[in-house]
Amino acid sequence: MADEPIGDKPLHQKLGIKPGMAIAALRFPTIDFLNGAPYDSHIESGKLYDLILVRIDEFPHLRDLHGLKWSLAERGGLWVIYPKGQKHITQQQVMFAGNANAFTDNKVVRFSDTHTGLRFVRRLK
Image (cartoon, rainbow, N blue to C red):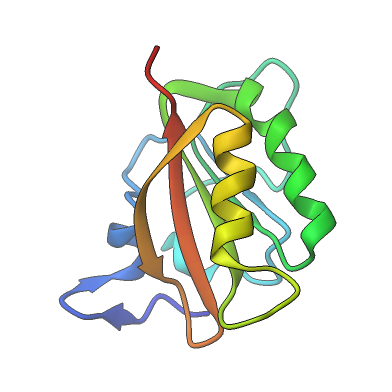
């Protein structure tokens, strides 16, 4: 999952990673896609993140989205990275879990040959 250009932009740009952002990257075996940006590998209590990226490979992990909403800055983005073309976890299930936790999906990206990313933001009141 290196930061290979996909189309015209590198992956870190498509994910919206910018200097100075507070970033959390959870459950990733490698973090090459962050392009050297500093990140936390777990959520720090009381800290608000501009960008949270979480890899969800199993359906039960979708429950974690509930707890992540409290750590996301008001205008922050939550990327859920999940396997492509699998029956045990589908885009519909990911979207449902995000919507059930007061998120709205607003962007999709090809994360790698095996994974897709779906971006959520807080639902506007």
